[in-house]
Image (tube, helix red, strand yellow):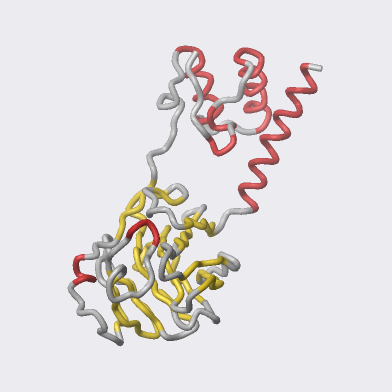
Length: 256
């Protein structure tokens, strides 16, 4: 029975690795109405500086470059948009109390051209038409959010955040946002990656002594095939658990 459990555990690891390889690409995350996150996927995120955006007079139209990127480059938008301010000249409340610049399009669809070398990006959006509107965002790679419901209500905070991130080092070039029935829509609260989240290691997961050495053999030495299988068998027999790199999401383990 023990041998069968070990075989099943190793099979599960192999299937997880194959699944990861098959699904490498661009991932979408619905941020909902929550405030912008500090990370998207494996990337640290930095919001755009809204100071140069706020310096643009409200009602200015024809804007094709939105300033404030924390990395070199600009955020392009086509067709051009008009600047408003949430909680002020933009009529409906924005989510989580945001009261900064928003950029409004009268069109059913716009395309954002992202700064060069973008690996993760988020934005928030809200329709002009009161009620629940359906938005879809699609990257240049073809990765899509699918239909996402976004509320516009003069009495209730609305807007929803959309985030995309690479899973295998790809870059994002454009995101096309479409909301055919929203009577135009606004976008705001942009954020872009400014580095990878610090990598988890055997040492940072709290392993010490023999457990640390064995974890390094399994997770960090580059072993494959039978040699890796042997170390996994040994680990499970000794510690009755999986090392951090074999846990769902590669989460941290415990010392012992």
